[in-house]
Image 1 (tube, helix red, strand yellow):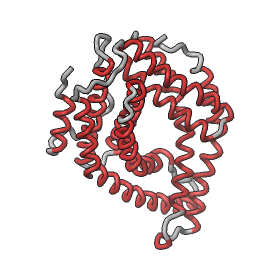
Image 2 (spheres, one colour):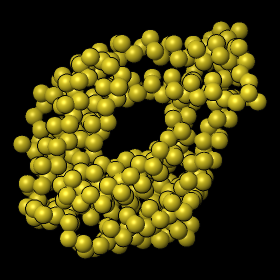
Image 3 (tube, one colour):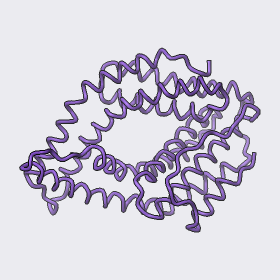
Image 4 (cartoon, helix red, strand yellow):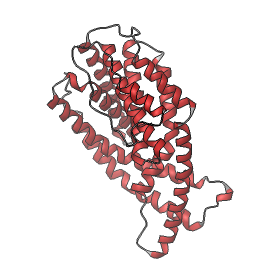
Amino acid sequence: MDDPRPASIHSLVRKGLGPAQPVKAGPARINRTMRPEDVFRATLSDCLAQLTANVATLRAGRSVEGLHQLRVALRRLEVLLKAFGEEFQQAWLGELRGRAKILCSRLGPARDLDVFLTELLEAPAEERERDAFLNLRARMEDMRDRAWKEATESVAGADFALFTEDVAALAHSRLPLARDTKLSRVARRLLDRQQARALKRGRKAQDADEVHLHRLRIALKKLRYTAEFLAPLYPKRKVKQYVRELRGLQEHLGAINDIAHVRATMATLLREPESKRIAPGERFAAGLVAGWYRAQRPHIAKQALRRWKRFSKVKPFWI
């Protein structure tokens, strides 16, 4: 199954002529008549198309949504390479996955600070505290500028270019990969593995421990991406209902993850070098922000676990 679209987008990006607006993941372009390895390559091409389009967006200028969608594309690639690498028993795909993970981590600080400044940091109404919060915001915006500089340098760097070249080559290769040529069996095993991991994480997360909830969130994200990759192979209505429940649960767990990011962001701020000395008022403002979000955590965790219990009873669409 040859599709020139991803390679063409990649070529345009290299020439600075590609799309210059954020691009979300599109619907999977697979069907039941395809072989497992062709499904893998087609999905790989789709992930590459999203990745290169958002690279073009960032090269055109700072785009909060473009950075977010680029990280989504890299995360989807990670999940795809791991899931099919396990199924095909091709350990070398893990090396490519590791590179995707490293590149994604280089974009993380800029994305985290975008979320913090646009969604999580709000100044209080009292004037005596407002100045401290405004100073805190200015300091965080400076940190974000530095993080964005590092992110754009990474996107423009040789590592990123070589990675996209290697993904494109794999997407258009004809290397024999699959041991089982029956797509229905392969798809079910892929989904079963992701569901089993999520259920295992869900059982451990019943103690509401932050680490266990974080691992559950990651497992559910991998399950959702895999479900979206393989969605065209199953009844549309059943897939839509399952993914809707999954997304709702992820939103609750995402709120808990935001709280963890607030604490991590404040800790990074307090580790700023001596030349960027933090005023007592800014420390106070940072403590207020971290404390307010921390106080919300027990209630949000309770809601998330309640939602998990509901989701765990939803019948998988592939069974």
